[in-house]
Length: 247
Image 1 (tube, helix red, strand yellow):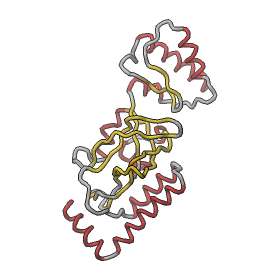
Image 2 (tube, one colour):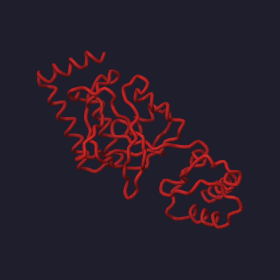
Image 3 (cartoon, one colour):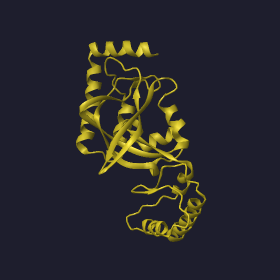
Image 4 (cartoon, helix red, strand yellow):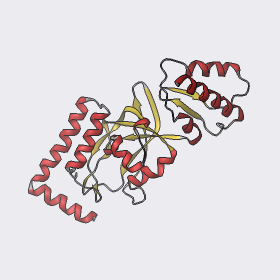
C-alpha cells in the first residue's frame, strides 16, 4: 500500500516538475529530513534517478499530506510557550498539528520571561527577551501557509499583543534561518505568574515533545517561583496593578 502511494506521488511530482509549477519556490521540502531543489526539471534523467533514490531511501519518513504541502507552501514556527503542546495548538488552528512537529530546537541569545498579562487567560504568558548568555528550548513546527492567519489570531497580532520575530534556530546539526516566533510588544515591568492551567499546558508541551530534562526543570522552577512570589502581599499588589491596567 505504501509502495503504491510512493510511486503515485512520485509520478505526480514529476509531472509538476515538467510543467514548472514549482518555479515560484526557491526550495521545497519533501520530507522532514531531506531537501530537494525546486527548479523545474525537463527531461533530466540524472535528476529523476536521484529523486528515485531519495524517495526509496530507508531513512525517509513519509507523510500522506506532503504532496498537498508542495502546492500550498509552508513556514517554520518556533514555539516556546503553550504552543509547544500540539493538543493546545490544535484548539486554535482547527486541525491536528502533530504531523507538523519537526522536533526540539534551540534558540540562542534569548531567555524566557513572563512580561505579558493575558486578559483572555487571566494570567501571565511567556515571552522571550534578548540575552547573549542564554538560550531557549522549544518545538519547531513546519506549518502550511493556510494556518498563518490562524496562528496570528491566537497570538493577538492584530491587537498588538505579540508580533513576529524572525530567528535562527538549531535542530540537531541543522540550522533553520528566519523561523517565525512571537514576542510581546508591550512588556510589563515585572513578571506576571501563570495560573495553574497555563503552567500545566506549558509543561505538558515540554515533556510531550521531550525537551531536555534539565530545561524542563528550569521551566518548572521559573513558573513555580513566580507563583510563590505572587503569594507574598508586596508582589501581589504590584501584579494586580498591572492586571488592572491591562483590562
